Length: 97
Image (tube, rainbow, N blue to C red):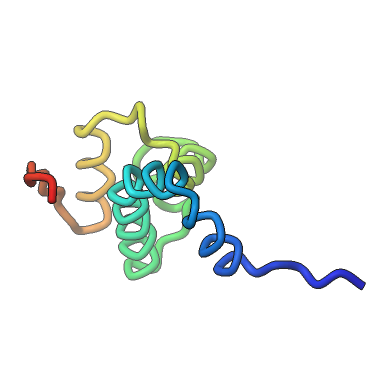
């Protein structure tokens, strides 16, 4: 019987590849923002469907957003979602390390 590799084990191995590491680093801000949206929704004890209803959207739109599908979503829409959850968005430019 084959033992499945855990995600963390796979990630650790994949990040040894420099190209993968660079791509991962470029997406780190996106991952962090997604995590914050999901945590905010859960803290508010609102389901994806309830949030979608409040925003006059379909539930799959919220699911796509939470899976990283917000690349074409406007800052205005992200701010509206944040506001519905009781948060605001702060955007800043930081110098690269």
